[in-house]
Amino acid sequence: MQDRELYRRILGIEAPWYVDSVELKQEAGEIHVRLGHDDMIHWPCPECGAACKLYDHQPERQWRHLDTCQYQTILHAEPPRSDCGDHGVRVVKMPWAEPSGRFTALFEALAIEWLKAASQKAVAGLLRLSWDEIHGILERAVKRGLARRKAERVSQIGVDEKAFRKGHSYLTVVNDLVRSRVLYVAEDRKQSSLDGFWETLTAEQINGIEAVAIDMWDPYIASLRSHVPEADGKIVSDKFHVAQHLGNAVDKVRRKENKTLKASGDDRLAGTRYDWLKNPTSMEPKDRKEFAELRNSELKTARAWALKETAMTLYSYIYERPARKHFRWWHSWAVRSRLQPMIEVARMLKRRFENIITYLRHRITNATSESINAKIQWVKYTARGFRNKQNFVHAIYFHCGGLDLAPQSTK
Ligand SMILES: [Zn+2]
Image (tube, rainbow, N blue to C red; front, side, top):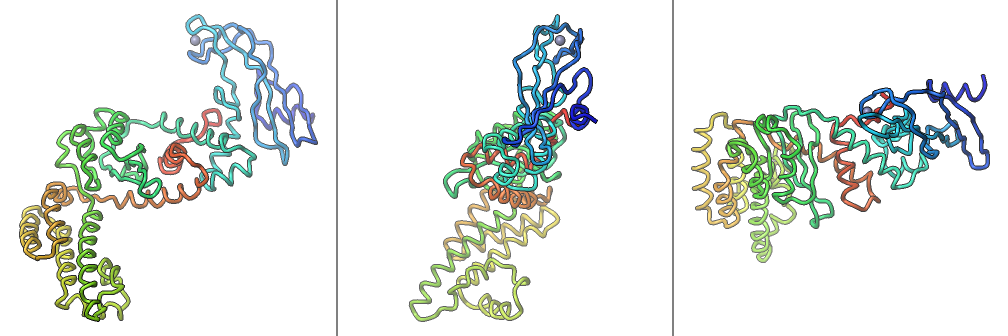
């Protein structure tokens, strides 16, 4: 078999295209494959597919293809332009690449598969691509995937903020809690950050939203209220954030009390911060016994802890009425506790109670988002070295968006 025929078969080149020449540049470690085409009278218009007259050819272009063993393999061809009665002069579709791509579709598909499993840096190194090239492949893949997304029903979503550089800048991430995928990523955590999400949905999709798990963050609530009908019955302040607020209040009580106790030589509370956050059933038996003594003591921290645990029993109710009664009772206990941090958190929870009690109706939390978050952490780790936020946003869509990323021509 001649090298031309071999390459025609390897590349899957079909009529009217053929391999004109194959040139090995040993020094450079490259193989150059030149493609030509039969003299066709008609070329399909890229817009409507109508058979059109050949207008002319563009200057020669190159596409990087999958390597042949250790040799970088580069295709060369002059793209024909068709002259369509309806669409005018257009470059015809090349079967091996997407319009204006500098890589063949198979090469991009390979890079995409590798990117799913390894860091951008590793893939760039292995495929001998620059940062810009590897990121271009990733960005195009995301664009394709987003364009292919269907207007599916998204009944339960979660809105989460994500720190980009610790404490300095944020991303807003919207998750599909049912399919466990990222739907939307925007810069910042303002109302406008979430506002952009609604534009990506159809009116039918917005109406189909049944429940939204969120942090207790007013800009998000404002965006929901102005876009989602009957939002208040659908907003569920995330259970874990409620627990976190209560836990922080307990810790404030503990820190203050610890100082007072230490002054009189009592260090019972020193180093116990995490014990008060843990579930006692997950402790070692020995620690559990020690902790039981602490929490049954007369300490203020023990009282604060009891308040926190009692507040969280709200989540084990099935019916709303007794749950509301429980909360009223708990609230009046908390505000009379004389523990300032607990009083403050009780007031805050009361103010937001209508968005907390909705949990009993919808039973959703951002826990699904937490598993997406773990994946986002991985993305952040494998994308290190990519300085800008836009790279990070694309990588989140790429890895967590559940998108169909493959280039068209390889399908
Ligand atoms: Zn046309």
